[in-house]
Image (cartoon, rainbow, N blue to C red; front, side):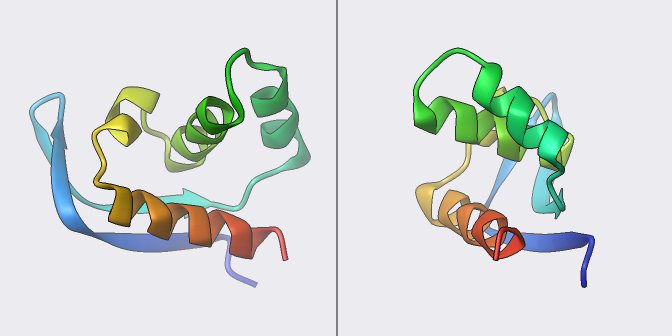
Length: 82
């Protein structure tokens, strides 16, 4: 069982002056899930906060991603839950 999954971005971003070419997600815990569910906002906003938390990035960085790259992260997150 992998505890982390690395995603290479098709469309790298820059955040806080640093290039981001790949994002590593760690496996979520029940606490991560609960924290995301308790946060305000839409389901999409809660998912963005969860992915940001697992990647140890601010949500603002995730918002800069191309949808193709975000879809890769969603796939990884879904794989963790199977």
